[in-house]
Image 1: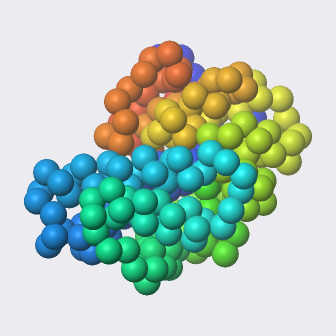
Image 2 (image 1 turned 90 degrees about the vertical axis):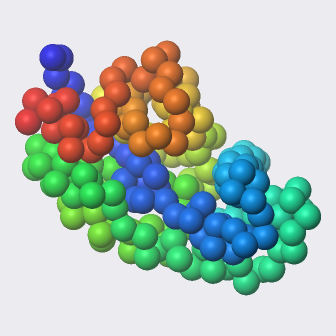
Image 3 (image 1 turned 180 degrees about the horizontal axis):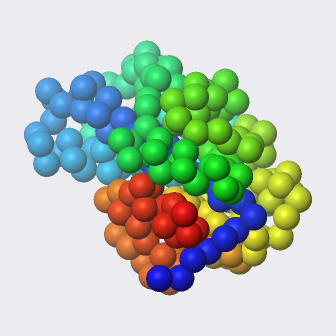
Length: 222
């Protein structure tokens, strides 16, 4: 197989490295009021509204979650309580990594600097990063960039901070619509898609696909 040796490996955090529990918490709140099929659709719509909320001007992530959950509840005729959105927001820093993440990251970090670009607040992300089991060269957030992914402004902020050419980066994500499409537009050197099952694969927007982070060291010849 071909090896890629980038100057930096950059990562999406939530979903790719950290196990995301948005749908789990939504099911706790509304599962007793919706049928199983309706609950599945509710979770998909909650995800879509979160995506819609990050496409405009930057706002605190608390508002992204609250607005998206309120819009989803409205669609299903459910009462929305601000305490529910607040509970999800407060839970985010407690979420830990997928099982495959710590070992794969730790081995890779010995040779190549690791970087995170996350749709997070500065006060959230470092608690999650501390659970990943590997050192990171830098951690950048939407709050610092004043833009959420998939906006190019978020990626440009990271690239400017790193002081490198996009072609020197390998970007790793489990989402095409948040990460890989933008990485393609900016001509990031290598795009790695992690098949977590969130989205179907799309060969146009990735150079290589791996099933989990444990496969990452092999991509860089480790």
